[in-house]
Every structure is written in structure tokens, then in C-alpha cells.
Image (cartoon, rainbow, N blue to C red; front, side, top):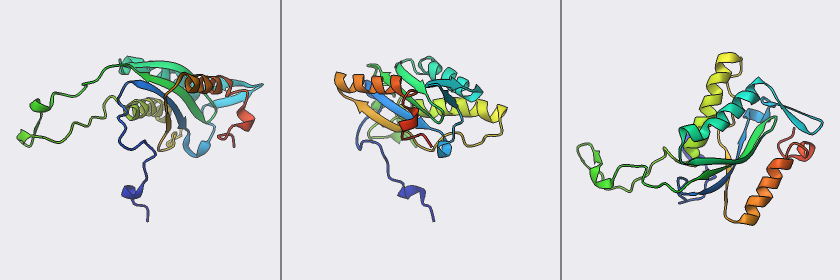
Amino acid sequence: MYNKLDRRSIRLYGYDYSQEGLYFLTICCQDRICFLGEIIASEMILNEIGKQAKNCWLEIPNHFNNVKLHEYVIMPNHIHGIIQILGAKNFLPNEKNILYNGTKDISPLRGTSKTIGSIVRGFKIGVTKWVRQNTDIYNLWQRNYYEHIIRSNESYQRITDYIQNNPQNWMKDKFHQ
């Protein structure tokens, strides 16, 4: 039987995903089904769901004012994008002002409202709401997402090139069925 507590995290242990930096994300459709459009002559042609995904992706900075979008591509069954979290810490209240059950909580502050995870979650929710209202698709997204912390200019350039060339390389893509 499946136990939710047995799931292994694919996140970097102990890393603060709300901290300033560049993150390469891949968000996949459920079962790698091509819900977002198709590649024709090495060009991505978005369908209505793909267009909604694009709109929601471009709206991310309007919901997270500490986020800047970099290169991205919407593919038939996944999205690649680089998101930058800009230097803005202390999103949470000051520790001495937090009360838990009437007493001060002395545990370390851990918030998820401005993390990469919350950004991805908000994006998925936005697209999913539209999809459920306008189609008969219920499960659009794979449960998790992939991320890579970009730590050098060389890595950034390599990932940017990969994103830009993804439609031309669709037949060789590991997400191609």
C-alpha cells in the first residue's frame, strides 16, 4: 500500500528554496500526455491549454513580486523555465512576535509562501482551474516538478541554450513519447 510518508524528496536537503538565486524548473504533464500543444516543423504550436499555461507563467511576477522570469519554453507535455528569486528575505513575521497556542514558538521559522515550491504550486493551480472549467481533463500535472539551482554563468548559458533549442530537439527529448 502507498504511504505518503514514504515519498523521497527530490529537493536538496537543507536548502532554503526562498533564497535569492536562479532556478531551472521542469513541470511535466500527468503521464507525459501532450496536453499543451504539438511540435510542427520544429515549432511549438500551443493549443488552448498551452495558451493558458503561457498566460499563467507570464503572470507569476504579478503574484510574486520578488520573482523575475528568464527564458522559458512550453512543450507539448512539459514546461522548462528559469525563475530568479530576487534579494528579499524576511517574508515571515519577526520570531519574537509569533505566538503558537498562546506562547511564543521558539522553533526556527520555516515559511513556504515565497519558495520555488509555492511559485510552482500557484502556477499549476492557475492552469488547472482554467482546464477544469473548460475541458474534461482532471489531472493535468504530474505531482512534483524538477528543479536545478543554477550556480554559474556557464550553467545558465547551457540551460538557456537547451530551453531555446528544445522545440527543434523534440524528437530526441527525454519527455517525448
